[in-house]
Length: 489
Image (cartoon, rainbow, N blue to C red; front, side, top):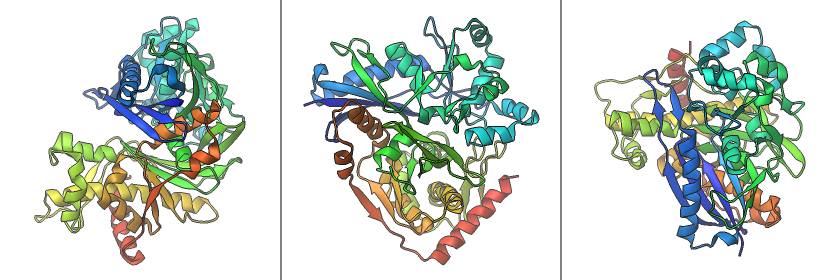
């Protein structure tokens, strides 16, 4: 039997997963990497550590599965998006730590572009609002503050890319990306589907530093993964993690949507093969290029969802384990009118306020640990509703169901509260590793080892339906909107 190796490189860890060509998960191995946080609150990752973890989890997952390297037919990669990596094309050495998507250090770059009168051009050409969240401003920050980067750019030796490009370069020696990742850099013209030279220059970037853009199911290159395989295997799919989850959720038709719960969250709807109109507060990006066709999506991104629970555990000390959050939240009965707005590095979609900061509002002397934890859990669902409401305003018909995935979907309290708040059913995917699954499916289809229809026919999920009245849902949500208004100024 043939197998597919799928690497899911996320914000907190690198997952090595092995799938059979029927689309079933055979084994998984995870390795966490350091979160490098400066005194200013800037967030970075070590690109070399991430690459070393990719090689290590690839070996570990084969060992766990008892699969011989010669049985692996192809590999796919899904990755945290927007995180910016710059390296020397000749040596393969990074010029600095990667700037993580959550990091807002490039706010001044954004303000400079705004002052130049280009904010409308950025949105019109790239489909996404001007923000330090995206790669372009992060690249610009590196050019301005890392002398080696600027010097290499002048010499034509600098590579700029997202994590997929970095890993592919280290594995194969080629500098490429796919449509999904390119569309999240804020440098891709989503009408021409090519790098926008004018915008690149506005952010201080030579377009020659950027990778070649390919279909997501392309043959990107071949690698032996540091000698793991006896010969080189094809890397046959690359997708941004949220796009990979959309694909694995079977959202391949227009007006099908999913929400991925992770460190942050992405709410994404397939918009079909024509560029859709987007309302204020959501982005238009490319879903993928598959089978020669490029599809679009509407998307809203939230900076802090699962990360809020980790904050309660690691930094505040209210939880011994994040897994306790749902139980403790349920035990509270209600939040007692407490709302936690987790704008630790600004508000994401649909507000896009880089300067807002987190707050807990509505506390009184009866507020305890359980109420605060519940408010944190509920903040995840409220932020998802913010984005769903904005997408519904932009489309002809409101979403009737939301497919959901990610580790937090195992939290029964959170999923029920989410269904109650949205007042539509949730379909909770039975597979937790949806980003990895999307890259695995794309690679299996791309290399001819699997049939697309057969893969999606096996999708399994659990339904969650609303258990409260819409009037109560709207009352709770109105309290959230009031809490957000206190910091969204």
